[in-house]
Image (cartoon, rainbow, N blue to C red; front, side, top):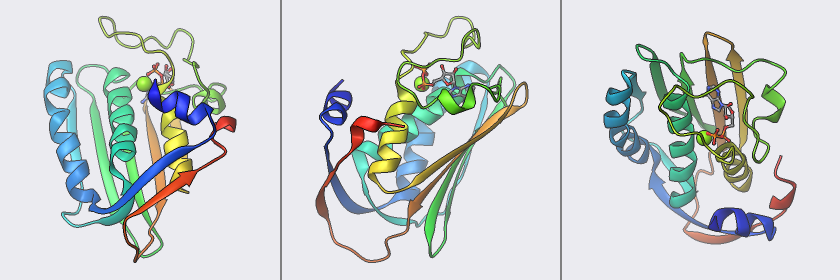
Length: 185
Ligand SMILES: Nc1ncnc2c1ncn2[C@@H]1O[C@H](COP(=O)(O)OP(=O)(O)O)[C@@H](O)[C@H]1O
Ligand SMILES: [Mg+2]
């Protein structure tokens, strides 16, 4: 709950460093292959080998972890989860999409709220219920990096999260206080 309390205090210290986001994503996707296999879900990554970004590694890893674990949790056996990373001069686009249960449109505006879980959506049986906090962290991390997150979903078909992070071309390692976290959404 460290992230939550830091965020509640309204500030979070971002420790940005220049790193290869392509390698970070590849490593995380690799770590998720075992749970994906156990769930009978095909997990693929479409990631360039080089994609330089100035980000807080711990927070960005936490963000990707949350999105991938949701995708696996809400996708039935035989489904697919795909993660893609597309660098462009203006921004870095990150996509996590699944062929899972989807989210009805009336719930979409709330999924980034703290403690919100779609009623009755039910993660697959045998999968631990979450607290409904993961996506509120994700939204906060995106915001702290001055990025944007979008979600598109079709019930019964799947869900796609698209994150755009500013592609701050040059820049050195920095410590940065990102404020106004309390508003959260
Ligand atoms: N990939 C997804 N597919 C379907 N529903 C999702 C997906 N990701 C999130 N959700 C819905 O949004 C809710 C909030 O997500 P999150 O904050 O990560 O909470 P948790 O994973 O603890 O339930 C989930 O309970 C679920 O109803
Ligand atoms: Mg979650």
